[in-house]
Amino acid sequence: MRVRNRKGATELLEANPHYVVLNPVDAKGKWRETFGNDHPIHIEVGSGKGAFITGMAKANPAINYIGIDIQKSVLSYALDKVLAADVPNIKLLWVDGSELTNYFADGEIDRLYLNFSDPWPKKRHEKRRLTHKSFLDTFKQILPEKGEIHFKTDNRGLFEYSLVSFSQYGMILKGVWLDLHASDFEGNVLTEYEQKFSSKGQVIYRVEAEFQ
Ligand SMILES: C[S@@+](CC[C@H](N)C(=O)[O-])C[C@H]1O[C@@H](n2cnc3c(N)ncnc32)[C@H](O)[C@@H]1O
Image (cartoon, rainbow, N blue to C red):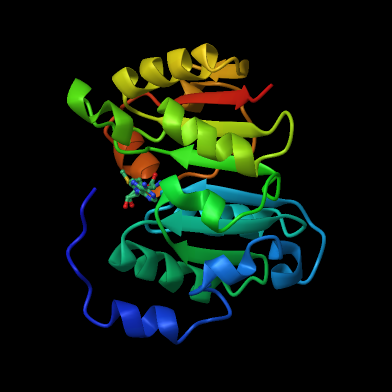
């Protein structure tokens, strides 16, 4: 998803340092201090316009959330939602998910969410998929032993690719949902893409995978 540049996005992000961590390199190894408590930290890589991460933060006040997106304008729309929600347990980062080891110490993150990641269907773009082995190397490093990735998508091709990628990496698939919205899964928080695709009748897939 490419979003048109939003006028004033930089100024908006810079004006809200309480929510937007502009120098995340300095926070490496100190995220619990940054939040001011010892609560678990869950991140979403590719958080888009922020409906999921904000909804999760509202629903789970004893968990700290960090929304990460590579596009500044997109992150500024997420900030609108965070400001409206006015909750203390959320931060936003404008960084590339492939560089997370620059911003998080080993094992500093307790869970990682991927939602409706760009599918990059062409084989020559495989390395850009967020469930490619090279991203799993990065994610494994910042998660604890047996750390988990929770992944949702409407894209069957990316879902099947990711199941194979997780399995080949030696991860355990703790749960697989082939039609999340028709299942008895409780507490699902919808993302913007999920709202859009499910309203068109598309099936939503979900997997929970655990590093070994
Ligand atoms: C298709 S959108 C989905 C947004 C949101 N998760 C949702 O479900 O509505 C994918 C998002 O991932 C972001 N993204 C793509 N590659 C990324 C990367 N390497 N690091 C961080 N964010 C990335 C994009 O900028 C975009 O906002």
